[in-house]
Amino acid sequence: MADAFCTDCKRSTEVVFDHSAGDTVCSECGLVLESHSIDETSEWRTFANESNDNDPVRVGGPTNPLLADGGLLTVISKPNGTTGDFLSSSLGRWQNRGSNPDRSLLLAFKTIATMADRLGLVATIKDRASEIYKKVEEQKSSRGRNQDAILAACLYIACRQEDKPRTVKEICSVANGASKKEIGRAKEYILKQLEVEMGQSVEMGTIHAGDFLRRFCSNLGMNNQAVKAAQEAVQKSEEIDIRRSPISIAAAVIYIITQLSDEKKPLRDISLATGVAEGTIRNAYKDLYPHISKIIPNWYAKEEDLRNLCSP
Image (cartoon, rainbow, N blue to C red):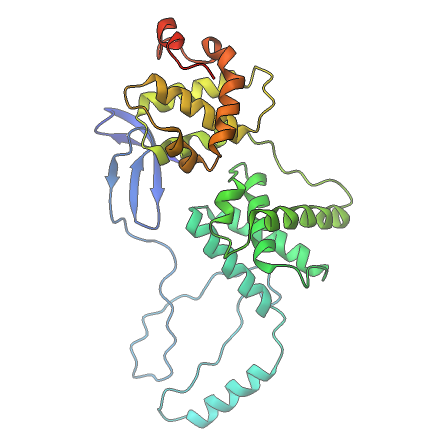
């Protein structure tokens, strides 16, 4: 994230870059500060067969250290009806007959990149997921397993290791049909394979309720004040021994904050936005309820407001 001056907040705030839309968005109020930004990534790559064609390309693709040839393999294109058809078609046939050891890796890396783009993940997470997949693939023990689940599990582990965790349900939504159970099994399998290769346990990184909170609040369209109160409540909840998953705690805190605000959100909407079942949110709310006065900021709600909350 970077900082920029927001005209609505009247101060410098953190901004988020939406590369797919080319927008620069204020992280505090959601105002689009700049739209349709110029894309400075690599150019569109075209390869003309004849000198008469207009080919504006000046650069090739980036190298990939995970591939045997560095990702700089030359591919002979199909003939397009001009002179030299016989030569190009013959060379193309001979190239297809040859074995390309990176063909399956290229397909896997492309699938990982597509899933990551759909979740709005940064390039470092894509690279980490690709690196994890190559380590597993080199052991030749993943054959016969659900490939989509393996790739999704690699992305899940990469998110955890890069301190940008996503829920299994979020990963599942872009996993090309792989179920949560299949992704969970694939994750355990990959961790075991990595432990065998490295000779030690694999660090996954600790997840906290705050890692998911801002994204969940954004899905619900909560205002800036409510988001700030939810963040403070989540931080204070970590000081209390509540044996619930961080995702469940985040959902329950959001439920409490919205019930204390003028814009109340039904439990069903919170369940859809967070991916947590309504019954799980109720149980987490039941565990948090005795500590509400400790975790809810005084500036957001008074004691009387807390007493008016429905008892679990």
